[in-house]
Length: 73
Image (cartoon, rainbow, N blue to C red):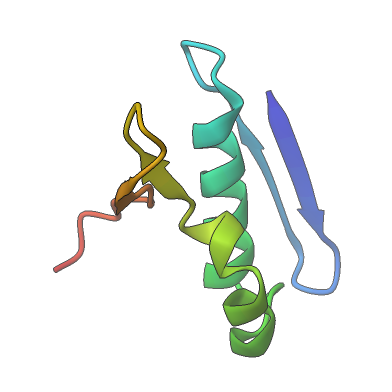
């Protein structure tokens, strides 16, 4: 379980990932902080490797990126 507080924005959040894998909770935490303005666009760019981490195949070759699907198109 991950929790976060954005006191300057007046937001709090809690994230529970059923399978316990921390990667999904970390991505959602970063996404929420970016979406609600706790992370600036400049900071988001500097943290891009964490916001959209590379997905590697068994040889270590980048085959994609992990990211939060918002349902918005």
